Amino acid sequence: MPYQTVALIGKPQHEAIHDSLILLAKYLLDRGCKVIVEDTLSAVLSGFPHEVSNLVNIGKEADLAVVVGGDGSMLGAARVLSRFDIHVVGVNRGNLGFLTDIHPDEMTQKLDMIFNGECVVEERFLLEVGVFRHEKLKSNNAAVNEVVLHHGKVAHMMEFEIYIDDQFVFSQRSDGLIVATPTGSTAYSLSAGGPIIMPTLDTLTLVPMFPHTLSSRPIVVDANSTISMKVSKVNSDSLQVSCDSHIVLPVLPGDEIKINKSREKLTLVHPKGYDYFNVLRSKLSWGSKLY
Image 1: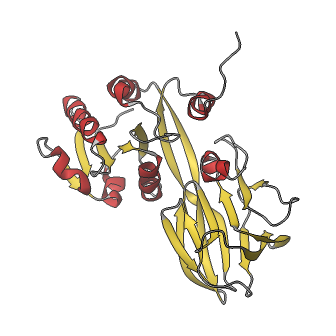
Image 2: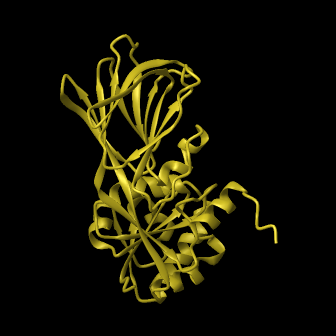
């Protein structure tokens, strides 16, 4: 891959990533790459020649972005970088690392493979969510993993109705609902009992959160559907919609939340040998082969 301008992204308050960033900067400069550093990281790499920029300009200028951190760092960057023609790779300095799959000890070897074209490139779709009040859009944002309707108070039920492409599906009393992408099927949705969905599938999963009925189960639907959640007027206030647990949109009783597949896609690049099921076995501690 002809990556000439490479950006480094991460969280400066996590000291564990500093060594990785310094090693990456040296590696990229030795390769003759132009290095752009996210503005919050500039002080960490003060000893290396680099440009400083925000995520939007990184998306416009860089060919490749290396995110150093956990999946949370990747999600924050992905919501912005998905708007641009840029490849993104993750170095795992977090916990699970479903999206940041390169181990810090193997950075240079794995990046050698990527620069030599020995890599797997895949696209992950995002979700767009809008909160409507009296049919007027009040707020909106995007999510890589999931959109969650939930109460602002802990263990507090709400009532809402679900429509798919304007067809009534069910009404529910529960703590909320998770609408997850295949990427997000191994995140919050998984802990709530949702299915694991291969990233190549064009589907969404709707996972009720502690529903007040035993017959309520997760549903897998076409990702090109419009999901609508109509919040009952009998609810108390303090309702919220969260995007990837990062962005919070306020919701009032009577509001309608609409979720659609975004036209923007996140382009991830993995070193050759990347295997989704190997990631699952490793991260979820599944059993290995018997023989």
